[in-house]
Length: 217
Length: 87
Image (tube, rainbow over all chains, first blue to last red; front, side, top):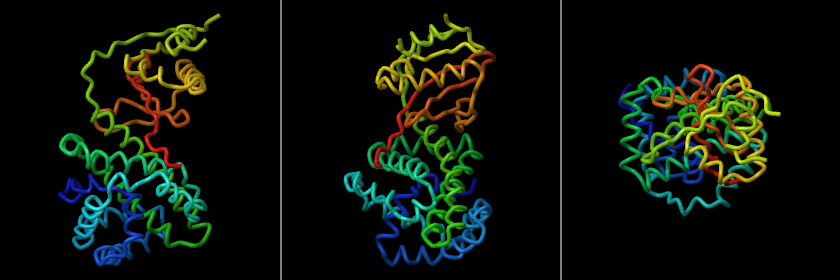
């Protein structure tokens, strides 16, 4: 796994996009300029997203810019700023509605918010967990990076398109990728949880026993 | 009359503790889903890395995490609420 791939493990997606769109700083504009050719390619053929992202990962100009803007987001965005009201605005965005990605947005936001909480409040443990994940499961870590960057670029591409067909195509791809992202979110959550107590097992062999375990009459 | 399952179900203590926090509607949905799974209707969606042998299915805003690695046995490991509620 390349160094840049490993470093991208910590990057956020939707919160970043919102931040970049809202804050037209010199850094964000430079990043957007670098991303533009990739976004154009995605709009042309959203199905090729993974190939485009592999190419993007080799871009020595765009990757550092991505890191710097990510660091800016981490430094400037506090968890208190991300209120329910502000985040609810994301779901009202017309293009997101037309692309039918409500469920995908929830999954992406959950991933970002959880990750941001870990970075702000539980950094040591979180960083070691992700480091171990990338060292012990490099193939999965690489796929995670591809998934995350694909989502970032697809969200930016969605912002550029106007036709219903393109919105639908990008929306479909985002829905598929968010499914994959959810698996990573759950994996990281489980990896970070400490289980000190003994985990006893109860076995059920019929519906009566199942109702007893679930406490259902 | 209780029908026998194709698979036996194993429930971890964490899982049993987690379901005590669910409301009754979710409990019933959960029962139906697990009942289907133990009868042999299993949906695949694998987790990653060290949890590769675990799978997740959605039940409303919850995710049930399980493993069907053992033959004729499903281990119900955990159930988690989707963390974000910003809609």
